[in-house]
Image 1 (cartoon, rainbow, N blue to C red):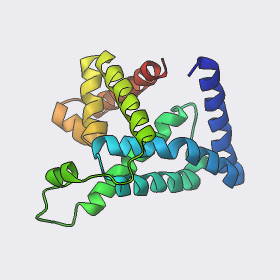
Image 2 (cartoon, one colour; image 1 turned 180 degrees about the vertical axis):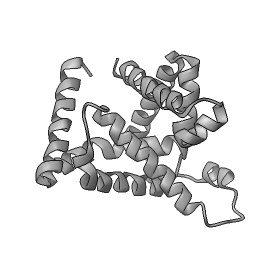
Image 3 (tube, rainbow, N blue to C red; image 1 turned 45 degrees about the vertical axis):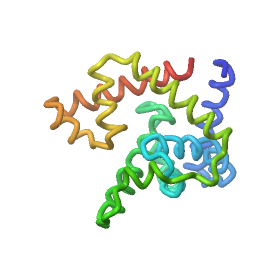
Image 4 (cartoon, rainbow, N blue to C red; image 1 turned 30 degrees about the horizontal axis):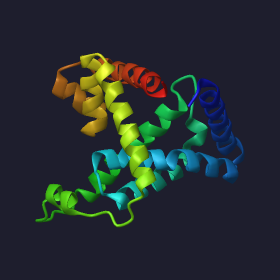
Length: 191
């Protein structure tokens, strides 16, 4: 996409989140859903390939949280994408914690690797592969300290506190590196 259309889309999404926050505008929520739900699904499927039901549940939960918390969005604190994907990360962690309580003798690694997705959509798969490639390339362009923290938080699903403990870094440093990495990553990916 070119910069003009990216800016137009971003402005439109910001207007929609304001309409949801101030007027409870369902049409604005529909546009946000159309834009973010597939991206949230791809985000979930990147870490758990084949788990379409989980991805659908998390995408729905993210949209419910957007509806309920739109008034809390502060554009001076983070971009809308960062805010939405932070909600998605937290929803995924909540989902995994909630569903992780149930013990099973099934090895999830072998289960997902053997599962065939009967509802495979070649266009969605192509888009997901392209997004994965762009994200992977963007990650490789980040400084190693930022890449390490981002991997702990987003790929391993660790909280900022857990990443701080594991890496032996102050919590503020972890949060700063995550924010810096996400900002740089969004620039790399938009190219």
